[in-house]
Length: 192
Image 1 (cartoon, rainbow, N blue to C red):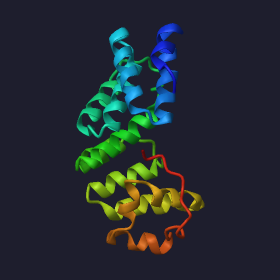
Image 2 (cartoon, rainbow, N blue to C red):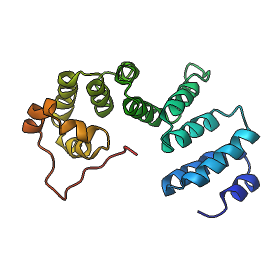
Image 3 (cartoon, rainbow, N blue to C red):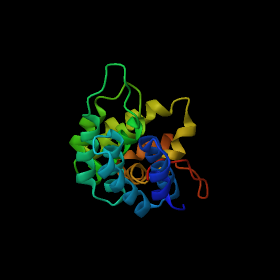
C-alpha cells in the first residue's frame, strides 16, 4: 500500500487520516500494516475510540478472539451522547458474534444478538442461535428472512461460519425449502 506511516504522520488531522488508512489496510488485507498503524495511533492518541475499535479488528484478524471480544466490548462501552451513533456498529456486532461462536460461547453470542432490532441481522441471529443449540429457532429466523428475499440465501451458504451449519442435519428442512446454490455459483459474504 505504500508508506502508511508517513501518510499518518504527515497528513493531519491524525484521527481522520488514521481511520482512512486503517480502512485501506483492511481492504488490502495487509494485517501487518494495519497492526503497525494501530500501534502507532494508540501511542499517539490513546483516548481515540477508533483506536480501540481498530485494535479489536487486529486481534480478530489474528485469531485472538477472546481478546478481540473484550476490546470490541470496550469500544461499545465508550460514553456517547444520546443521539451519537456507534461508528462501525455492524462490523463490531458481526465480528463479536463470530468470535464468540468460534470460541464455543454460543450463549453469549445469542445474548449479543438479543439487543438487535427485530428482523435485523438474520444471518448473525441464526448463527448465534445455532451455536447456542437452538437450530430450530435459527432455521425459523432464516426462513422468515428469506421470504421474498431469496437473493440472500446464497450468501448464507457461502458464509464461512453459517454455511457449514446450514449443511448440517438440523437444517435439512431449511435446505429442502431453500437449497444451496449450484456448484460454481457463490453468494456474497461479509464473513472475513
